[in-house]
Length: 319
Image 1 (tube, rainbow, N blue to C red):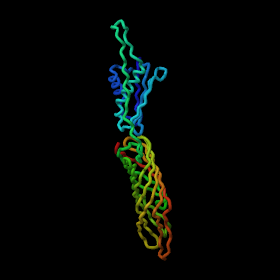
Image 2: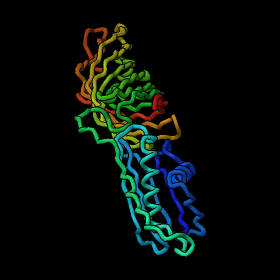
Image 3: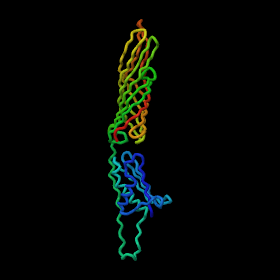
Image 4: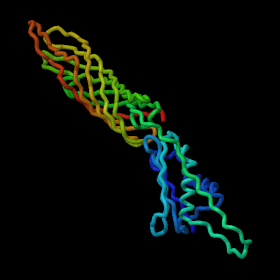
């Protein structure tokens, strides 16, 4: 009975054995020609491999022309390398091929001396390495145990970081540490803006550096989603002008933040990143203008909460 093999490597499993090599290895394992073109085949084996996080999952199903199932297998492996499954896949496909094609026929007895019927050996069982015990880990489920990083430029829009809606230029980096999680690092330069009246006016700018931890990152090799928290530190620069004396002040700023982010792979190794964040300032300054007569006018008081959105590109380094 003619048998066809349809082998699929699902997204993320491109490093696994390909269809041509699998078919050759199965035929070498069985010691005979097994597979035919789907156009003439009356039976088929549908098989696929996909990432299981951690490890891999392989599904196999043999069926006839009417779609009836003749046999099926499922394989799993916790190994990081898909090639560790090659031999098990070859054996499993070989067993399914034997089940789908049925026992081989023998020529009539008259052509051969009469002898006892041979005893068919039991097909070898597929034995995979035992799954290691589950160990609680804080690392993200993607590429566990592998060091990797992303770095790139970004564009920010913020509220509460300066007197009015602020525009910022940023750099963003992420370092994924095995068993620890993702370290979130960023810097932002907020473009200067003026605030106040003609006789009591201030020009404000700001620069921030931040570091945090992303304990939750999940997704696939095509898209990811995560949540981060951390702190930022920087300097707010205010320059007052008006009817009184002009003065330039630099004030330290510290803020705790939370951040939700999403990443989509454009093409390897470039990712599109978007995030939204909320912050709670730990230092809140009030800037005022002192007039020539000694009176004071408030120009800007830092709020209790800040927020913003960020979009950028990240270049991926590592596996």
